[in-house]
Image 1 (tube, rainbow, N blue to C red):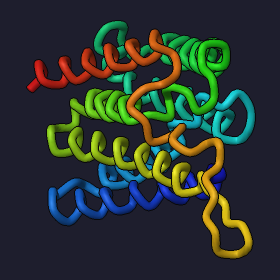
Image 2: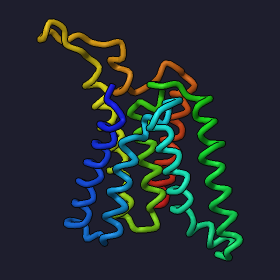
Image 3: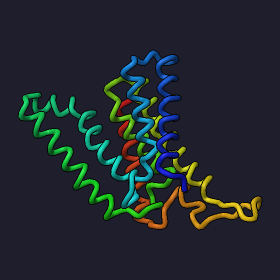
Image 4: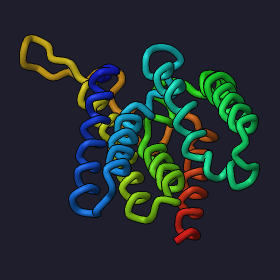
Length: 210
């Protein structure tokens, strides 16, 4: 399978491409285009959330424990206000909940190359990306959804392309990991049903929000 650096580069490439598209073709502001680029960099690592150890898991949870609360802060502010004590509690609790509780649950409930290395997981992440940026307008939300989807799919594609080795200098030989990334289901039926259910639910909300 491709390494951390390769996936990071792939995510950055996806983010840069859609960022440029949004800036020049959809009139996104410079901060919006930069946000799309950041989303792409993160999306290239998302399928490796099921890795119990290593750089992807540590990097992702450090990053999303700051990113997600920041994206949702406007909603929290409308409910509870923006007093200094509330901001302190909101970000502190969010960080601990995502970085430690969320990370522990992911480690316990997932296996590497399981359902997170699949096409429906990429679809689910794309829907979440849309909803996180829906307040910024449809163009921004759609570009973020596309960026997340292609970032995840590029990760899966790179893993599949690395699922073979060469013997005698010219004979390609498939590895045991072949087919474990670019797939539509995992070996676990409950996990497969759950990911399809979550993807359908998220995209149902996207459709309802118009």
